[in-house]
Length: 495
Image (cartoon, rainbow, N blue to C red; front, side):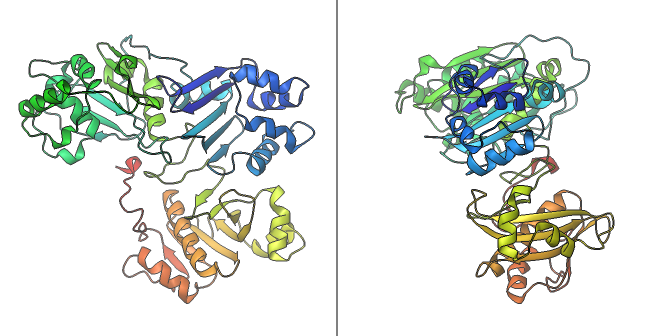
């Protein structure tokens, strides 16, 4: 089993990696109930998360399987943030004492099965290997990267640029996009950066800083990275063309004074022929890893390159669902949606039965299922719960949906039971979220058992295109568009 603690303050790679050979995740957690289980856990993980001590309080005996382990973790621990658990891994995003952090417990078998997701997370220390050998196939990024230039006839190769940044305490894991410079490889990147830029707004600020620090006679970027370690300007505001931007950058270098805990002497820089990596020491919170590599290095290390791109973009290496920038995610087998504020939607699980029967007034969930899911044919039945953010304090509603019914490309929303006075607003937000999720999964329509209420129709109208009436029982998902607060979030999977 591997344990990865993703922590902004954890050294040059902002993560700690421990390997416990010979055990699966379930076997390792079951050992917590042995007499010396907690002491062994602290030894295995080099100071285990404090939540593990509370886990033993959730039951007198070890969990029998991952379903039971998921129940205990979800109901008692780490419930305030993202929690994704499958048969071979546990992935948790949580708010730490100072900054957001993540914990991953993953079986060796899963790492071997999905090296394109886990090769970088389980890499233990600085630096990454920079040796290259001809790869058997050209490298293909796991999803499209933002291209910053256009290649011309005769150009070969691609350089990928990835800059991690800590801009706030919350929503800081992931969201770092990888940029591509087509037609250029790393030895020529410095010269390519000096070319005129058509649209400065499309370039990330870190790359504009690097560009300004490249001298007119430099083809590579090694000297520019050394200068950037002592740079505190904002090159986006510098004059153009490049020679003027470079002179302005040099003036900033002459007046550089470290502040806010920044220690340039702690920055690590290593530049090879096809991989440049820097752990930039930026403030009291420590380092920010940067990686710049070309297709030759990527083809020699395809799993490491692919997992690095995904790790930077997404907090969860195990996420298997395609979704947009800053949109919620879940494992394919489980739905987990945010509906703003504290409301959340997830699949029903057996331990939820007391909450469901109390809300609906029925004797059992089996009776509820019988009422909802008669005559569904081959459609997939989904019983969903609307709860508060921590999944356990209060149940606001129960939803019954059938995927692939009445047609294979439709979803029928058969049952909505929501508490008052949240009903009208919550039902509209629920339908919006389901429309978006279903559209991503390839469904073309949401079928309501009966037309929505007038107030719900009013709230749905802004997210349906002209010609689509929310008073109808059918909402075409091909005409559905994102709410205004999602509209600016580009989806790199669909570029």
